[in-house]
Amino acid sequence: MEKIRINASVDYDVLIDSGLLKEAGELIFSALLPASGVSATDPLAARRQAENTTAVIVSDDNVFPLYGEALKNSLAGSGYKTIEFVFPHGEKSKSLNTYGELLEFMCDSHIRRSDMIVALGGGVVGDLAGFAAATYQRGITFIQIPTTLLAAVDSSVGGKTAVDLTNGKNQVGAFYQPRLVICDTDTLSTLPPEEYSCGCGEIIKYAVLESEEFFDELLQKPVCTQYEHVISTCVKMKKAYVENDEFDTGLRMKLNLGHTFGHAVEACSGYSILHGQAVAMGMAAVTKAASEMGLCSKETLVRLLEILDVYKLPSEIPYGLDEMFEVTLVDKKNSGSVTNLIVPTAIGNCRIMKIQTEKLKGWLEEGGVR
Ligand code: NAD
Ligand code: GLY
Image 1: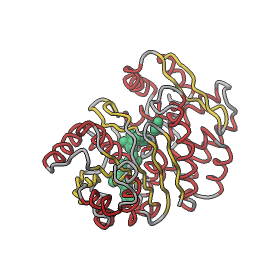
Image 2 (image 1 turned 120 degrees about the vertical axis):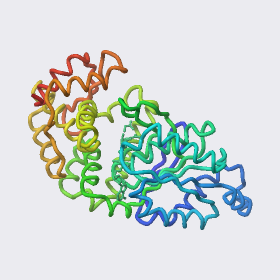
Image 3 (image 1 turned 180 degrees about the horizontal axis):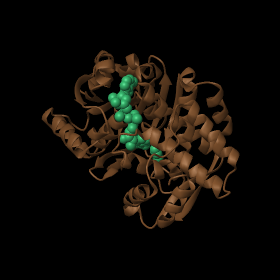
């Protein structure tokens, strides 16, 4: 098992291995023990405390039928009571509406500050459940069990939680770290192929940001044949960003590589283009623009397009220049006249460039958007 310690405002472990779901109860029990106020030498008192704790399992209607029962059994085996809140899958559920329903459900179920939320699912579940955990009674214990590749390598780690507003993604949220992340790589076996590709999009992002060697590994051996290695490599990279810049005011912005134009693609598509696919298009566009402007070599672009193709990820933005620029402006209107654009200078190296927001149109054009 890989165990990666994240030292942020809350210190916690990210555990990565196959078969962890059935051990989730004991893993959570052990992780919560130090802060429980109960002595580790008094196992009966610790067990009594677990028996007084309710785990609110938050999941979606694809994931819960697959893995909910195993998680419930494991939590019950460690003494926890469980209740579940299952909502329709998809980005549309990452809303104030679902968030409100979850809070009302917890209140009606008499959930207290000493109870906990366990998120079982992808980034939508984790972001929504995390925001509920951050705000219910001013904050209750939060555990992440990511079941998509994207959530395993990115969203479950680092404490960004949020829901969307009608006209803006992630517009309401909080930084709120989980107390434990349990990544059971077996759950990835049921991922639909396009969700696998999306996770690979975020993994390629880490390689372009940080490591040519990792980039080459991804080309030589498919991600699905080396999940534990790939996920732990990405989590270690993310760890450095989170520990240096937990609240996203500097270095952590680099994790937005491909996201400036990617968010616009998602919005233009009415969210029918998936996040990882949009990030792939965004990375391709910004790298093409960088290569046209002489900020990186043509070879960098060719290599990026090659790996996107290998992982069946799109690289062409299917929307026009005016439409893309308009949506980019809407996306940026609350963050001022300067955009921090993440620009690859080589495979394994990127820089943050401060661009006047109106100049992004030129970047889109150089990036092949007509
Ligand atoms: P998702 O949670 O919608 O999951 C994608 C689909 O896969 C859903 O239909 C889900 O039901 C299904 N699914 C999940 N696990 C499965 C499994 N094991 N087997 C079969 N089906 C499964 O989306 P996602 O791609 O995981 O996450 C995208 C979200 O994450 C977006 O809202 C994005 O904004 C957010 N995000 C957050 C952060 C962060 O730092 N908090 C980072 C990146 C992305
Ligand atoms: N996914 C971007 C971040 O966590 O900062």
